[in-house]
Amino acid sequence: MRRYWLIFAQTVTVSLAILFVVTTLRPDWLRLNGNGGAAPAPAAAPNGVPAASGLVPGVSFSQAVARAAPSVVNVFTSKTVSVPLVPLPDDDPVLRDLLGKVPGLSRREESTSLGSGVIVSASGYVLTNYHVVKAAESVEVALADGRQTAAKVVGADPETDLAVLKIALSDLPVMTLGDATQLQVGDVALAIGNPFGVGQTTTMGIVSALGRNRLGINPYENFIQTDAAINPGNSGGALIDHQGRLIGINTAIYSQSGGSVGIGFAIPAQAALRVMEQIVEHGAVVRGWLGVEPQDITADLARAFGLARPGGVIIAGVLREGPAGKAGLRTGDIVEAIGEQPVRDTTSLLALIAALPPKSEVIVHVRRGGKALEVPVVVGMRPGKPGG
Image (cartoon, rainbow, N blue to C red):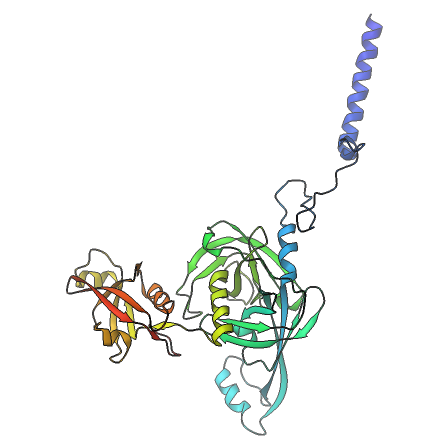
């Protein structure tokens, strides 16, 4: 009996040793299934893109990138500039510009720059940043599939730093639109573009903040902030969600070095598309205008006007012949709402006014001398200078 017990113990010991070796060196031998031990092939997504094959399901965003990347293009621009023949400090652009215009003190040479863009229409419309194509004499667009073509600048809106290009190619990969209004801080965000001209690159981060403004970048600011790396050349590229849908147009970074430090800004997709639609339809963005100079209400002003807390916007000036002046609004009126939308500060006031269709009538809710008033105003068309 003892002999049989020793044989059994030795057999178990050898089996455990073999199992340990196999588990350590060839774990794939243990993955048995109904296909005779072969590992199953990755499931195909509805669009034919293989499903993620990482060890931990849900970690890879390869499907999202595969859907979105073909719609992101490289934008190359060129223009002729005057270069002074005399060495000048780089931090004095005014002097460089003046001397560059003096005959005999400068030479003409071609300057090139690069950026990114997003195909948003099968008709060939491409969204990018205004600063990417500003003053460009020629614009070239290179697609991810290797095609390259000249692009026409349909129009631009410097106040949101957006521009619309048109390319004449067929079978264009159009970016799927996401809903930027449903974003939450902490959502995954991926940036696709052409940083430093190295080629199409994808970086990952999260949505760091929403509704960023008062940055001094554009007159109208309502940015998505992300820590997905955005570098020079990424401008005009796509910010996408975890499903590969467009949620923003990458436009700016906060950096003292010129490279990414984890603070990037993108224009929400819905806002960018509204600008594009107006550029395509009217050649420019049409914005509402009331003819007022707004000022935020500080804690001191709130006490002076007898307000319980700071809120709303005080009218610091009214253009006499402007829509607000004709309607009877006065300096010192406190604007609390435009139509049904409450006014928090000057940024929200300007955005609400800009969204109003010219020639429409809106009720401006103000407080004057402690009394609430409703003043109907016929909206005008905003001139080319910042203001409400």
